[in-house]
Length: 357
Image 1 (cartoon, one colour):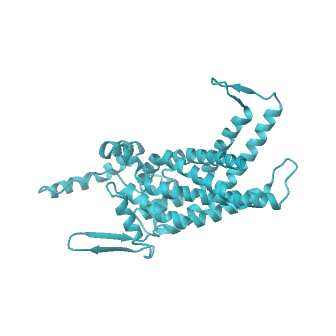
Image 2: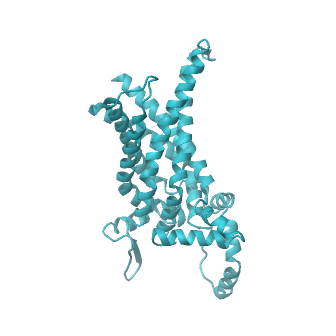
Image 3: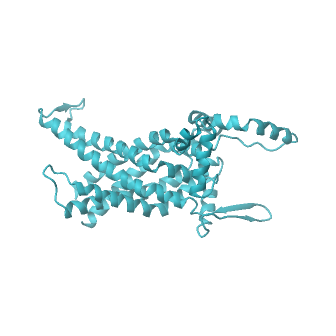
């Protein structure tokens, strides 16, 4: 395995991470606010009638919060109160970090795949079952390593998305000043003119490790499995009929092999996202709650989420586990296109760089 292969995986992962992040950031913002129970509230300055206003708010807060936590309400509320650009809040931190994260993950994926291919023989049909184990291990290790980078970055993102009006500089300063604080620590520094608070940069790290470790192994193993199976199916279909040549309006020609190079990574990426988040989503929900300051501790946060779900329905036990998957549909709406786009860009860039080499 040469250093050239490493840099191909790293570069392709970097580019795919940046493109997919920009594409799905609005969905991520809505999902984060929904997970954190952060309803759209515009804070107004206090007046002489603040006591009466407080009383009115307290009597209707439950109904208002339940209404404003619906995805459609969050979307409309953010645009009407803060403008359409608010849907990309937190993207500055993620644009800087996600390409690095994706580069690390794709490098682990490529390394694991090449290692098993070089050290284990293939089956008669050209497949190699050991590749699944290799990419699973590579994805898990890569997921654990990048958690130590992404946990503070996501704390900045969540802080901005939940606290509308908080600048990127304020959120970043708060997290950077908390790099040496323990994960459950908060401090407040007061001066004559202002006060600033610091939170541990490692708040939510435990949940991040659980979300990004094994689930990333599942992500890559699922992608590789789907890609191999779809490739077999496409080849079988192509061998049973004459190669189809399509002439575009511009006079260019593409074959069904070219279409397969687009379809296979996207479908495989969509399948991988579904299986991976099926495993890791509860920890993502717990992480967001902890980083938003709504709860502390993985077990305590899980209990709080389960209690909220069971108390909101007469069939409490049936909805208890459902609570840990609250917002799962919205997560898939975000992660499926991100994974499909990410793997397509990765495969395309890696192939282009390899052909140049």
